[in-house]
Image (tube, rainbow, N blue to C red; front, side):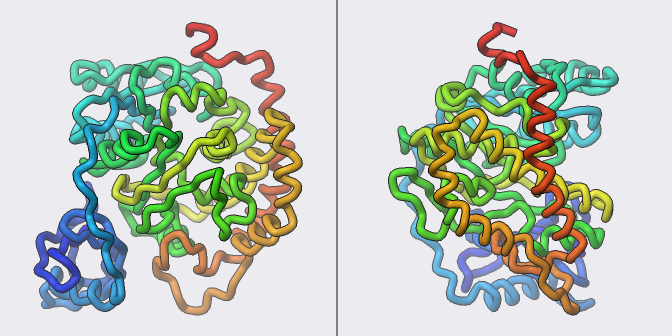
Length: 417
């Protein structure tokens, strides 16, 4: 299945362009999955079947008009003010090839004032350092090392080293849209109470069954409508708010006001990939920021293309990690902020039903294509549901194990490291 971008001059207008996803092969006949833009603005995705000999762009435009019937784009607001200065933090470990691809896209951002930091987490070789210092240091990319294993510890090291007013985080397996950073940082200029912003994550490739299944289940995307979360006005459709942090966004595309993130203690170093907790570092930070009274916004115009893992084993690991990360982060919240326990317990009955519904098995039938983003309505195989639930049972234990490992660990901006 090929992946591309289709830009239209309005849903009833002309095709402005059809391009492959960044770094991907040309979009041709067969099954095609495209991001639809209206004059550059992401508004939805469309799955189309293009026949041999068809005009590919026109065939996909026709499908977009059909599938997006009834969509009414919001009026564009006045141009946003100059975005605040930003630091982009990329944590990595032994993936120099993927990192280079990500850095190339990050160096091409249209943001007027930003820096890039690469945090090498518990490195086993010099590959990352050699890549950054040999190819990217002259372009202003900074290299730092965090010896404590785990994504949260690496992110905290980046927080300590960063100079920007806004701290943006992404992964080494993404390609960032050229306007990603500007769109992610701009909301902070408009809203002094905004503590965090997240953005749109789309698949760069859909070439294996595992990649297609993950995207069919909702992927990492939270939809194409901007959304704003305010602790003063909790959303009625979020029964565990602010503890349903997975609804806010994902760690591959997130940004924080630097002072806010530091004031809540950054990321819990006993969470995240690379620790026994297996995940939850991003969820912990989202929940802590919102629980501290700050607003959070989801901004779909801030787009990155993510390279999903390719094998079934990867998908199994991911399902287990999702479950473990969810309950690990909830454990972290209670351990670090016991005062939040009554609020969490009050939400548990409805929240538990909500969580189980998300991970529940549904009969897949013959459908095997990407579905509606953010809905998680597509069938999740029973085996993956079981793994996710096993992970949920393990998460608190994993967190406590990880916490013992980092006992006595101080935040790097407190130690001057």
